[in-house]
Amino acid sequence: MSDAAFHAFAASAFEGRPPAAIDAETARHVARLVLDAESRRARIAAEAALLETEARDHLRAVARRFAPTLGAWVDQAAPAGRRSVKSPGGTIGRKQCAGGVVVVDQAAALAWIEAQSEPAAFGRWQRLPDERKLTEWATRTGEVPPGCKLLPPRDAVYVRQGDVYVNLTDEAAR
Image 1 (cartoon, rainbow, N blue to C red):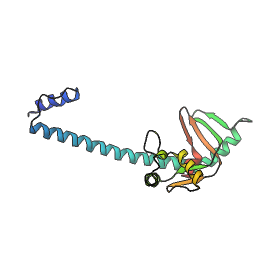
Image 2 (image 1 turned 90 degrees about the vertical axis):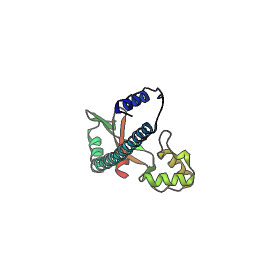
Image 3 (image 1 turned 180 degrees about the horizontal axis):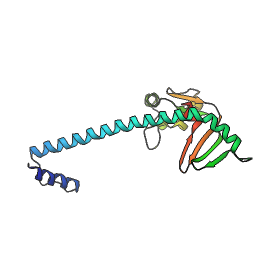
Image 4 (image 1 turned 135 degrees about the horizontal axis):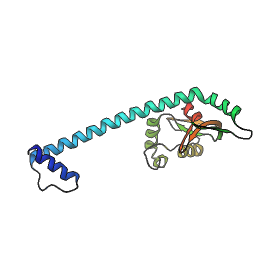
């Protein structure tokens, strides 16, 4: 199959029209395209996982370094009767948080969930541990799942801007 014929074939595949016919050479080209696309997807997924880990580690380092001093600053800067301060970078505040389970090792928590046949402990949209459901389970059984840590009730420092909310106290504890 010539390059022009192959490109016409590939274009018809992207337009949703099935090709008129496929010969052995076209099948090899399609197989190569599929494997190249899968390889690219896997590379991008690996890079995304690495970037997510780096970003999470950076957030935790910032939280560990600044959460205590931000909390003290909010106590001084907040108007009387308020527990938050609005700034151009977002709202910084303190709030009472109930104790609960936080996931510190996602792989260990997922392995435990699968071994326990606790699919309800997964989040609704992604295959991630649901900390609220794990907290309910820990409260009911008295056991903290592997890969998790039980945090006591605490006064937490948070930063919020629009839909983005970060509990610095919980991030620092992970």
